[in-house]
Image 1 (cartoon, rainbow over the protein chains, first blue to last red):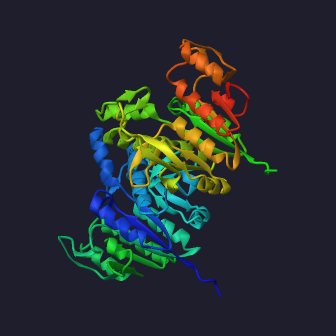
Image 2: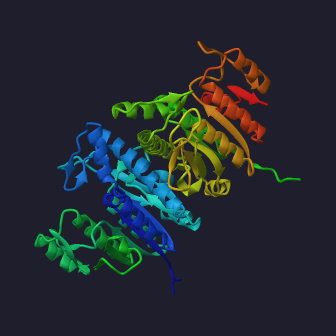
Image 3: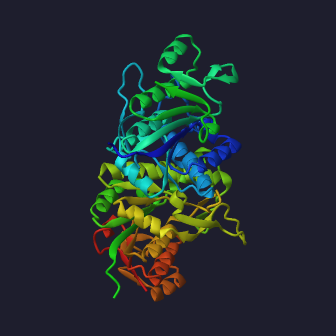
Length: 260
Length: 260
C-alpha cells in the first residue's frame, strides 16, 4: 500500500484580489489560517496594463491572452516579479507567513518553451514543459511558502510570460506525485456564476458534461473557460480537489466544486 | 579548536555590469567558475533612473543615495526585483548556475527599518537591522546560489530601498559566523583608481590609514567612498578578504585589496 500523502494547498489569486487592499488583506487572513504546506500563484494583468498605458505601450490581447512583445515582457517582469510579488511577500511576512517569491526561472522551477507561431504570434509567451517538483518539495520542507508569479523561462536565458491559472494547475499536477493536492482559484465572485450579468447565483458543482453543455449554451464567460479547462486537466491528472470562488473557499467547502 | 569553516564568496555587481550585455556575460562566465558556495548581490540604479524618466518621475539624490518617494519605491521594486533580478537569474540558469532571486522580504532574510528623518528625509530607505543567516545557510545547503536585489522590508508590510553595497557587506558579516567569507565588489574599473581622471593606475592595496589620508587629499570619488567604508566595516567584523575591481578579481588576486 502506498504511504498516505500529506496535504498541499495550491491557491491562485487573480489581479482583482491584488488590486484591492481590503480584498487582499481578507485573502491573506484566510490564507494564513491554512496550517499545512501551501503554495500561492498570482497574476497581475491589470497592473501590467496600467504600467503599459503609463509608458505609452499598446496592450494587445487575443482570446484573453496577452501578446507579449519584447517591451511587454519587460513590463510583465517588472509588475509580476517585482511590484506584485514583493508587495505580496512583505504583506504575507507581516502576517507571519514565511513567503518566498519565485518565478519559474528561479532554481529552474518551471521550464517553458516559447509558443510556436501559428495563426497568431503570441510573442514571448511560454508553454510549460517541466515543473521541478523535487526542488519545490525541498522548499516546502524548509517550511517556506512559495509564491509564484506568472513568469517562466526556457533555461536558455529567455524569460517567458505564462498564464497564472496554467502555472497553478501545472504545479498542482506535478506536486501530486508527493502530496494530496487541493487546487483553488480565488477571485472576486463567490463561484462560477449561473448568469454572468448577476452575481447572485453560483453553480455549487460543475462536472465535465455540464461544462460542455454550458459552453455550448454560452453561459460561461471568456474569463472562466480557461480556469475550468485547467481545473479538469488537473483533476484528470490526479489532483484531489478543485474549487473556484472567493477567499471564503480557502478554509470552507464553498464556491464551485469542479468534478470529473 | 574551532572546526575549519568552509569558504563562501559574496560578490556584488553594480548597474554598470548589468547594463552591458558583454560585461554581464563576462561576469557570469567568471562567476560560474567559482565552485564553492556563493551569493550575488546586485544594484540597478541606472535602470531605475531610466524607468523613472520614462514615467515622468523626478529622480532626487543626496550624496549618491536615492531619495525614495512612494513612486520611486515602486520603480525600484519593479526594476531591481523584477527586471534586473529575473534577467540575471535566467542568464545564470542558462550557464548552469542554480540561481535563486531574492529580496530581503523573501523568507524574511533581511530585516531593515525606515531611516529616521533628520536633516534629510530619505523616504522609504531602509537601514539593515538583521540578516537571517540561518535561513541563508539552509538555502546554500540546497546548493542554491542566492541572488539578492537591493530591496528589504520592515517585517510590518513595508518594502524598503537599501544600498546594494551595504547589503553585500551586511551579508558578509552575518555569514562569517558559519563561513570563511570573501567579499568582492565588482564594477567596470580594474580597481580603486589612483587618479579619477585616468583608469590606467589602481591601488593594489588600501588600508584604513591610507583611506583617511586619500579622503583628505580628495583622491577618492563619491562612488568609491561608501564601498570602502563598507569594506573596512566588514573586515573589522571578521570577514576574511575584501577586494574591489573588475570581473577578473573573482578568480584571481587582482584589483584593489582592502586591508585593516
